[in-house]
Amino acid sequence: MATLVLIPGLVSDSIVWAPLAEAVAQHMAVHAADVSRTSSISAMAESVLAATDGDLIVVGHSMGGRVAMEMARIAPDRMRGLVLANTGHHPKRDGEEIRRQQMIDLGHRSMEELADEWLPPMLSPARLTDAELITSLRAMVLRAGPNMHERQIRALINRPNASAYIAELGCPILLVAARHDGWSPIIQHQEIADAASDTELVIIEDAGHFAPVERPVEVTAAIASWLTRRFGGIYA
Image (cartoon, rainbow, N blue to C red; front, side):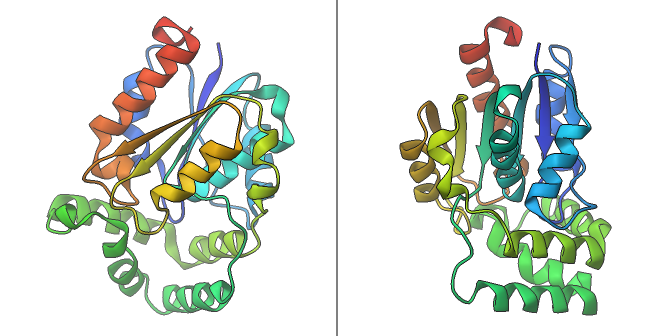
């Protein structure tokens, strides 16, 4: 049976995929990946591959989705499936490096200010008044700290162009998009779905970029349903 690998995104940790991990832990091995120590997407992918054995089903959120795609490029023989949530495939855009450097500078000045500026646009309007959710995500960002933030931002600045190899990804792919995700909109997921050969796209309503945390029940149900349909009852 394949191991389910869970990869968080920028300045994120295991809380992003905790509900999914809890839901499937009795049925398959689960590995919570640590992508906090390296400063390139390829190095992150290599580190997760080195930390795991055998066949993998890789679940990635945001930046973690890019790591998942890079893992599939590097080790296609180990990939049984990918789940890509709130992610993208495009290369660096014009002006992006300047904006991201500004975020690096802000993080080194104050991670509190970074969290207060960065988090609200990542959430659906309905969750902006959810004090418990905001407190949890803010604490997660502060745990990351400015150095991890800088490493991961630099990894994103120099990210591989996944658009160049999406069509070559041979494993089944589930794409999880969110209705109110302005950072990684539905169209980006549709482009991946159109380019790859074996894909499904689900849209989570009333959620933004942090859909796995904003709507954990719905996201977990979508992934569990896909696992059952693609890999069999209780995932094989």
